[in-house]
Image 1: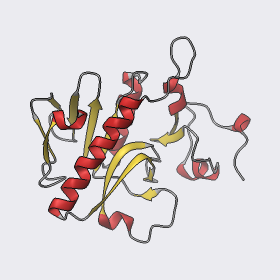
Image 2: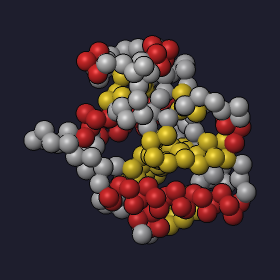
Image 3: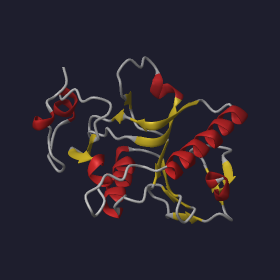
Image 4: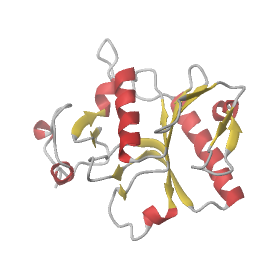
Length: 200
């Protein structure tokens, strides 16, 4: 049985991972838990005039393109990992990380004996594709949450200016425009593509 919508927690509510899981939210819910704080992605889709501005076709196209490039890399290198797209959720109980990630790469051993609806553990790579309605503060919170939970690398992809920002704990932030190559470094060994390929 799912939770009545009137009793759902508001953005900013503090909860434990167990309390959040007990809500038994439907897959269509925009709620997630990041660092023990409830985050509502639907809030990020509210435009200035109050209309919903869901992710547009450009977001979906870039998500598909990045998934293709990562699948091609995995097939060519045989690297042991699993690739997901379309709001994949994962859980890291000590931080309560349960976020809809646009594209994610997980180590193969993270998927052993997987029976729960959310993947246990954090991804090697998390990809955030920006939408026109995204607020910078909310994006920063999500990215910081990934890194603090142990995600090795985060790509922040902006379809509007056709750029890719790479963030890693202990490394300088990298900005890649269409002319430069996005590298997986030691996180995704052998991955290297021009940033322009993300937006074709």
